[in-house]
Amino acid sequence: MVKGTQFVGGSGELSTKTKIDLSGTPSRSSRSSHLEQTTGSVTTMDEVLLTVVHQLDAGSRARIAHLAESAAAADGYDALSEHKRLELTLAMHRSTDAAVPRGTAAGLALSEGDDEHGDAGDDRHHQFAAVFACLADVAEPVGYAQVSSAGTKGGFGVELVLHPHYRDPALGIADALLATALSEADRLRGSAAGVGADAVRYWAPHAGRSSDALAASHGLHPERDLIQMRRPLPAEDEPTDIATRTFVPGVDEDAWLYVNNRAFATHPEQGNWTLATLLEREAEPWFDPTGLLLHEEQGRVVASCWTKVHPHTSPPMGEIYVISVDPDFRGRGLGRAMTLAGLDSLAGAGLRVGMLYVDGGNSALSLYRSIGFTEDHADRAYVHSVGSVGSVGSSGSIDLERPIG
Image 1: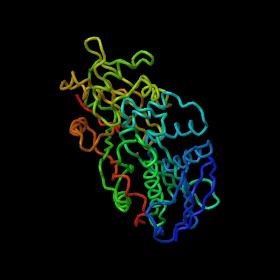
Image 2: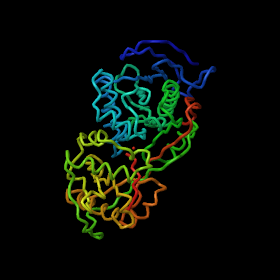
Image 3: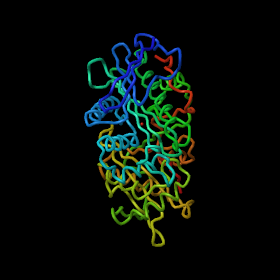
Image 4: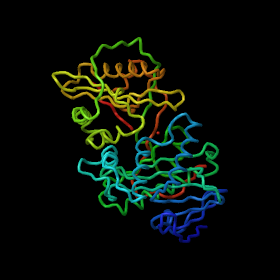
């Protein structure tokens, strides 16, 4: 039986409460498959409370961070993708009525597939919701779902984080979190004229049979695999002698952006970056200009390899974050040479494992295999059109596709 009441949440939002039985298959409303909600909602499931909010205070942000740290400690990888972590920063700025840093706003708009005229500061283009699953009378969440629009052309993205002790499908926490997140994406889509595409994507890190089953129970099907590949360092079996220099902040931004945007002209995440997008990444704690290598010919930058160190993964890894080659210089092996230069740089920094992500359908897979990379796992996007989501199912991780020159 579904029972609804209204309350005013901590952010001052009028919300709705819906009760679902945690002990068995969650009950559904006879009137609608969607959870009842206005601008936010709370769902109680026996001893578990699901709360949807659209603004974050410092305490909520800290609880998300603590949960993510617990998950990462158990899993050996970040619980939320880079895009979702950046969106949390943007949501915090809005919640405090602080001016959103221009770099953050534009960076999110374009790195998530927005068109080049998009404005992340406009709520029509950037909708956000956080779903917390908490035990009764306990503030710390045992589960979290993040819902956000992906720019004017990107639909909505959903990611889940579950505490390691509460992942048993029989508990139904992941099931209810995903149902609530999908329903919220549906509701936000209806209020977000200008968001654009109808697709909603649920991204599952280290995808497998359990994530496939969870997604299928909500009518989602696999759309895209993002494969993580690894190889040992140093790559002494693959020497490179390409001339490179390191990126100089405040000097090289325009030159790097020119090559990147030409190389990724049709890519949904990496194309159409602006200066603000790049500056936002430069402001991240992990950014190290010595890890961004540039290759010049004819007096200009024509290729680059951007690396990123992950000191807290198990094992610590060095990532080939972005490889870009100007289309005018493709077919000369620059992509391979720059990848090897990046691996050499990471090995010099003391890393013993190199890593990169590539779309499952990217022809660069064969190149990476020839360099010694092997597949470790796949993160998977599940998709359907918003409008048929929100029913509770029956069941119990920057993608950068890299054109290579």
